[in-house]
Length: 118
Image (cartoon, rainbow, N blue to C red; front, side, top):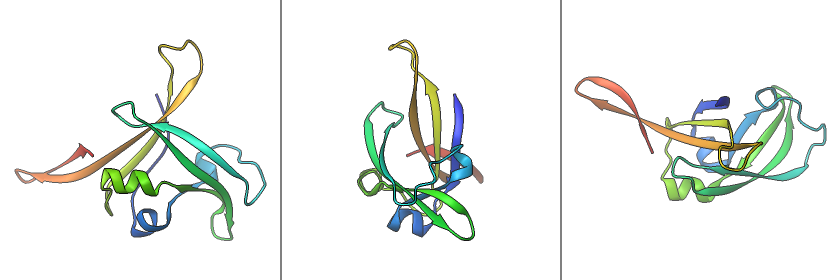
């Protein structure tokens, strides 16, 4: 499994959509405003479709804006949760890959910080 992207969520990620820098995704098409769908699976195997738009910002260059409001609401994501997007080889369907989204929340237990699945 190869990690594509990981970040601790901010209020902006929760309220306005996740921003993934283009450098994390390899070569993005140089077409600002291009919209596409990204099919991902959570740890339970449930499929989610995120609406993605290529945008440009002077400070970061091209980035992928991910519309994931339904996922945020249903999973009760919060500021400081950590999201990781990974690419994983398909086991059952022969060749190819699928994209897995994983969310963890920091919990303090017996004086130790642990990351638990959300």
